Image (cartoon, rainbow, N blue to C red):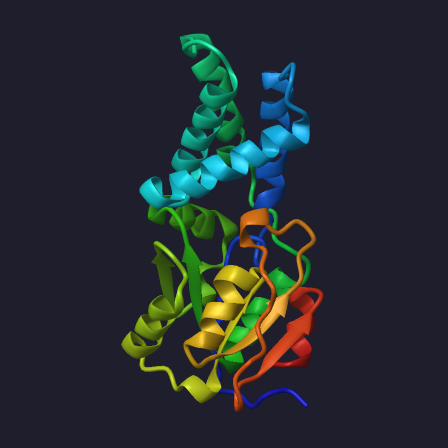
Length: 233
């Protein structure tokens, strides 16, 4: 049985509504091929890049600017001597290729989101660069279906508590819907919300985590596509 109308659905953006990480993976593959390291395997280069990204996020947040800096940091650590202007330009081109991608909505989003908006209160809740995320939402054509847009620096329990408080959402009828255990599911459960985990095979490796058991009285539902939300809401 679907949940009754009047639920509040906090919905993630990247890799929940539209493809995102696959473009980063393509850029990373290009970067690794360009680096063509003589002693490090492709896997070792990727692990070095993951570490650079973890560090850069702390100082630069999320987004293409942070990703570009991570590529440069990784390149500098794994090569000898300073990076030339030409190399800088080439490295930046990998990130630029992501910015130029068209928005590709995931299966079921275009048809189902308007239906969900008629029955429930939809709030887009994503993290990253405010300008970049707002631009993607605008280009997606999905903005009219949301009553509010929340672009936060980090998705942690405090961020969810703040959003729920400011929008006067009742926690027992509020759900976080997304593909990331680390950012969407676990912190939302910790904030007292329900959650729906939508599996995406290309979720960013830094968003991987074991899904926690929901506290008593809270619901956690796992589905394999956005379209399956029609059975719930």
